[in-house]
Amino acid sequence: SSIREEHPLMFGPQSIDQILADLIEVKKTYDPQKCAFKIKNNGMGITIWQAKQDDEIPADLTKKFAGCFEEKPKYLELNQDHRFSIDRINFIESVAEELSK
Image (cartoon, rainbow, N blue to C red; front, side):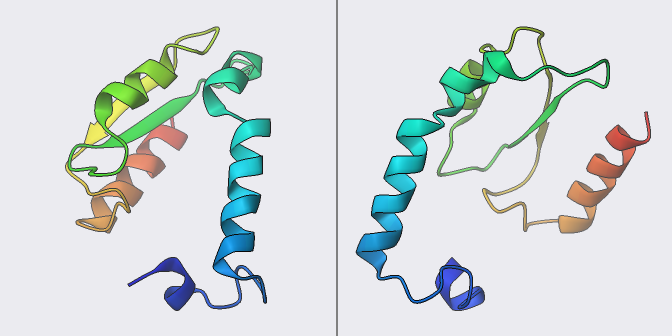
């Protein structure tokens, strides 16, 4: 299923072409690899979760992104798919554990 099917009100009345144009503009303006160095962790740390079975964003790209931060973030890989839906409880527990530290 698509995100539009799951969340029909998320994008409002925009056409697919308008949505794609907006996303392309956002990517140009806020390219994560160009913005990461600006993010400061304020002593709290940054954690990046990577899905091992991610067929959309490969681990090497996420690791490259993690290298863009001024202060190296914690990098965790979980046995998940791109949407973290294989074992959602495991993902939620991982996030809760990190937040409790």
